[in-house]
Amino acid sequence: MRVVAIVAASVATVVLVAWLGLQVSPRPLAAPSLEANEPATIPLPDDLPTPVTRFYHEIYGDEVPVIESAVISGRGRMRIAGIGFPVRYRFVHDTGQDYRHYIQTTMFGLGMLTVNEFYLDGHARLEVPGGVSEGAKIDQGANLALWAEAIWMPSIWVTDPRVRWESIDDQSARLTVPFGEREETFIVRFDPDTHLIRLIESMRYKGADSDTKTLWINEVVEWADVDGRTLPRQASLTWLDEGSPWATLTTDEVVYNADVATYVKQGGP
Image (cartoon, rainbow, N blue to C red; front, side, top):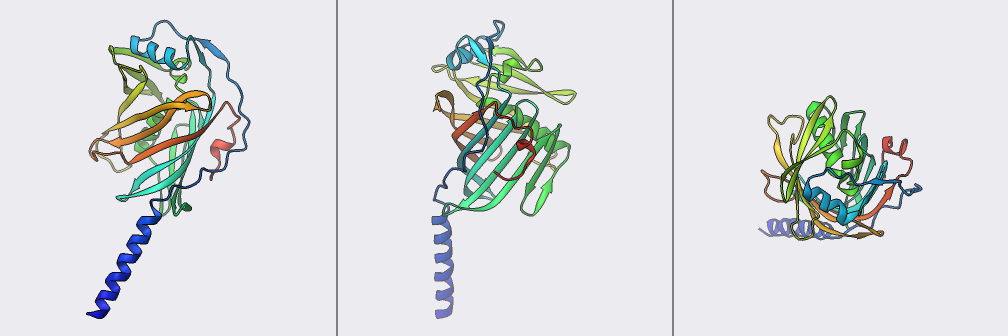
């Protein structure tokens, strides 16, 4: 019985230490060695649905920036195999074309597991410890991520001629984006008081073996001033069938219009 008690106490200690380690927020990733460039601007189109026009007036005014690339860095939490891990991340976008995700889980603020996800030339590759995911359904989900993450550079939804907005009602609109030779659709919902985007919803495959699509909900929890721009300070990602966010992301820094032609294809931070 004494041995059992010792083992039980040891297990409890390990669990407690692990839990404590998962409560420590990591430091931000080192700033990327990239030079930002001030974007050109174009007039806001005058044929947008009413809530869309209000949104762009709120964050840009009458002129919208032409953003060709964005490097988004931040920290947050992600649920992996049922466990919530602190993470730090970097999303590199050649806007409307390609992206790379670098995500690092941490314990006691120290790096542990890393994920490199690429979406290049219309095809996705997800590299995680223990395996690689690819295929048509992964491509579909990655393409939705490409356009949903444009919430950090939403001007592309009006500067890219392949994208169109359609009215639904006074607080929501339909956003249609390209997917190869096809198209995908988001429902975008706006806050009635701030006029800022609150929810972006779409139907997405959860994985390569998914038989059907699941409602994927992107919520902007908080808009705030980030380096002098009104941007999503905190966002969450939820699968409808899971009922709670599997990821929460807090923005530390965004670099616009840097040359990412090589950087978007590299691994690591």
